[in-house]
Amino acid sequence: MKFGGTSMAGTERIRTVAKLVAREVANGNEVAVVVSAMAGETDRLVNFCREANPRYDPAEYDVVVAAGEQITSGLLALTLQAMGTPARSWLGWQLPIRTEEAHARARIADIDTGALAAAMAKGEVAVIPGFQGLMDDGRVSTLGRGGSDTSAVAVAAALKADRCDIYTDVDGVYTTDPRIVARARKLDYVTYEEMLELASVGAKVLQTRSVGLAMKEGVRVQVLSSFVEGDEAPKKGTMIVSDEEIEEHQMERQLITGIAHDKNEAKIIVTRVPDKPGAVANIFGPLAAAGINVDMIIQNVGREKGETDVTFTVPATDLIRSIDLLEAAKDKIGFNRIISDDKVAKISVVGVGMKSHAGVASTMFRALADRGINIQAISTSEIKVSVLIDEDETELAVRVLHTAYGLDAD
Ligand code: ADP
Ligand code: ASP
Ligand code: MG
Image (cartoon, rainbow, N blue to C red; front, side, top):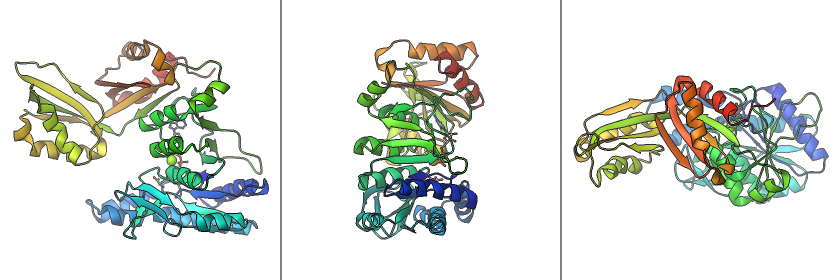
C-alpha cells in the first residue's frame, strides 16, 4: 500500500490511512506500506535548499528533502501502534534500498528484503518512507519528484507482493486530469504501455519510472482513493494491466485513452544555422553531454540559401543552462541568435487504438484550429501525438480535445 502526500497530510488523514492498513491486516494480509511526505512538505524543503544556496549540491539536497518521508513513516507507525496494530518504520538506509547514478534523481538498484519479510511474517506492518535510498558511498539519496510511487512498486516487486495499491486523492486514473476537466471519466483498466506514455507526457498521477518498473516486473498496480468515510472500504480504483488482460475486460477499445498536459517544457529556436551535415549534431551534442533531455525537434526547410532554423523543447528547469551551453558553442554551431519561450505547454493524446487508425492527428489539429489555438511544434510516437501551444491555452485545449475524441462523461 502506498499513500501520497495529501493522504498523509496531518494527524487525522494519517488516522484514516492507518484504518485502511489495519483493514488489510484484518483481512489476513501481510502489509508493507510506503508513504510520501505530507502534502507541500517536499516543496517547502526544496525551497530551503534554494534559499541556502541557489547552486545547491544534490547530495546535500537529498539529505534535506529525504526528511519529509522520515517524519510521516514514524507517524504512521505510531498511529498504527496506538490502534493496536504492530508496526515499525524501516528507513531507506536501514533496509537498505540501494540506489545508483545521480543524487536527486537516483535509480533503485536493489532492495534487501530479508529483515522486512521476517518482520512482516511475524505480523508487523512495515512502514517504509518513499523517495529515499542509499548510495554505495553510504550517503542518502532521493528518487526524483513523485518518486514514492517508484519506491512502492520496487518494494512490491522485491517482496513479490500480490498487489501494489497506490492510494491518492483521486479514485483512479481518468481520461484526463479530473481537476481540469470536470467531465473526465474514470478508467477501470489501462495498459502499462498507455500509462507509461500518459505519465511521461505529464499525467502526474504516477511517476513515469514507477510504471516502467511495474511493466518490467509484472507488478499488479491499482490506483485508488484514500479518501473514505469512517470505516467504509475503499472503492475499486483503476487497474494497470497487460494488453492481453485488457482485451478480456473490454469488448471495444476507445481510440484515445487519455489526454495529458505538461507546462514544464520550454521552447528554444536557434536561428540561421548552416544547412549542412553536422550542424544539428553540433547543437544537440553539448546538450546531451550535459544530460539535458531534448524532446520535440523541428528543423525548418532552409529559408535563405544554406541556412535554416532549428526549434526544440527542453525541460523548463534546464532552459538557462541550455542557452548557456549553446552560446558557448556559438562559433562551432554558427547560428545567428537564440529565441526562447517558457510560456508553452505540451498537450498529448495517447491511445493504443491509434496504432491501427488513421486520422487521429488530423482530428487534433482540426479541433484546435476551430478554437483558434496555434500549434508551435508537433511530435508523434506509435501511440501518442503531442503538440506545443501557448501555455495560457492549456485548459481550453485539453477540454476541446476531450470532447473532440468523444471522451466526455455523460
Ligand atoms: P500523490 O500525492 O498521492 O502522489 P499526486 O498529486 O502526485 O498525488 O497525483 C494525483 C493527482 O494527479 C490528482 O490530484 C490529479 O490532479 C492529477 N492527475 C493528472 N492527470 C491525471 C489523470 N489522468 N487521472 C487522475 N489524476 C490525474
Ligand atoms: N515527497 C516526494 C515529492 O513530493 C516524493 C513523493 O511524494 O512521491 O516529490
Ligand atoms: Mg505523486
